[in-house]
Length: 175
Image (cartoon, rainbow, N blue to C red):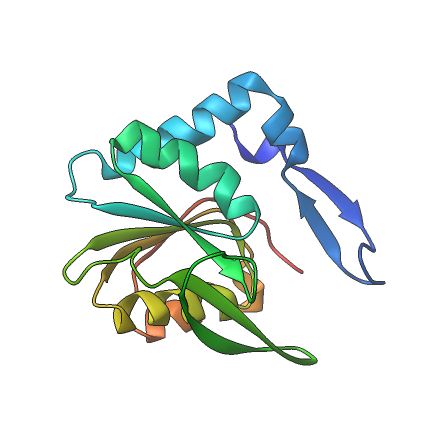
C-alpha cells in the first residue's frame, strides 16, 4: 500500500514556505490507517519490545494501536504538566526557545526495550529528548519509528548520530 499518497500536503502552513504534511487524511482512511499500524507493528513482531512510547500527540494515535498489535504496554510522552502522577522530564530546544517532555516515573523500568513512535521526524529534537529520557530511566530505545521522515531537515541524521536506529514508512523531500 502506498502510505505516502494518503498524506495531504498543505502549502505555507503554519508559516510561509512550510509544506505541512498532514496525516489526518491517512487517519480517516480505514485502509490507510490499518496498513500504517500493521506495517509498523509487523516490523517489530520478531523483536523483543516491552513498551511502546508515543510522543504527544500524534505519536499517541499511532503508538497505542502499535502497542496493542505487539501485545505490550503504551507509555505517553507528554508536554510539561500534562501527566497526573510524579514525572521525570527533559528539556529540549525549539527554533525559538525551549520546551519540556515528561514521562511518569513508573512507566519505564530498568532494562525495558522501548519502541519510540511519532508521526513525523523533522529536526529530531523532541525524539532525541524522549530517547534521552527513556535512557535516563533505564530503558533501551530499540528504534525510533515514524510515519514520515523529512530528510532534508536532518532529524534522522541527528538521531543516528546519537546511536539511535530510525525507521520511517515514507519520506518527503524539502521542508
